[in-house]
Length: 288
Image (tube, rainbow, N blue to C red):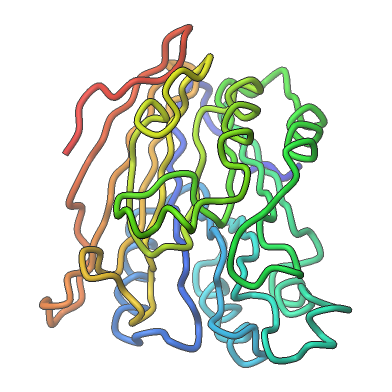
């Protein structure tokens, strides 16, 4: 498990959560603005929750690699999405579905990170036999959460590409398969925060909205597309800034948007949701 450099105990961990940059459809001015914004925020970790490329082509992964190199020395935890598996190269899809991703980000498809009492675990929800819809066996999720149980982790974060929640009803079909069973298992394993993307629409709220009655509600935060021109009508290019205070059981999820009408392509914080943890799970303290 990777860990960042030592920091004072109890200090908040700041994470930039990006999703769906879709290199191959990137708006160059937005990429320049995003790099400048991340560097100014100086987070401890950058998470990219899949669909890093548009068609898993070598040149697209090379562009993603240059983007990550420009963020050095900030650590990056990335997982593949369905667009990171070849679509038209059938042989590559069957035999080496993640080769482009691994060439850029290293051999680990499900990376782990721990620092300041926060544990982050990546999960691959984009199997080679499904191009679009997400799927992962609930038993494998449970086994991995048990494998990485840590006596020093006070707050657990799980990263998937496919969503556990949605805003627009048309996105119900995009929920990860077996999402209700997965949500129950994540709650039972005391996961505090689940990150995702895929639908290019941002969201931050507790599971009480979509999964009422869980034994321990957690927070779901999804990011829109960070860089692509393939935006949703209600969500421009955007990313999340997470501030996690593990010892205090607090988290703040900020949404940073790059408005299409802004000729200078500057990212700004447009919403801020603060969540708190009690023995029976997470609740929203205040939002917007």
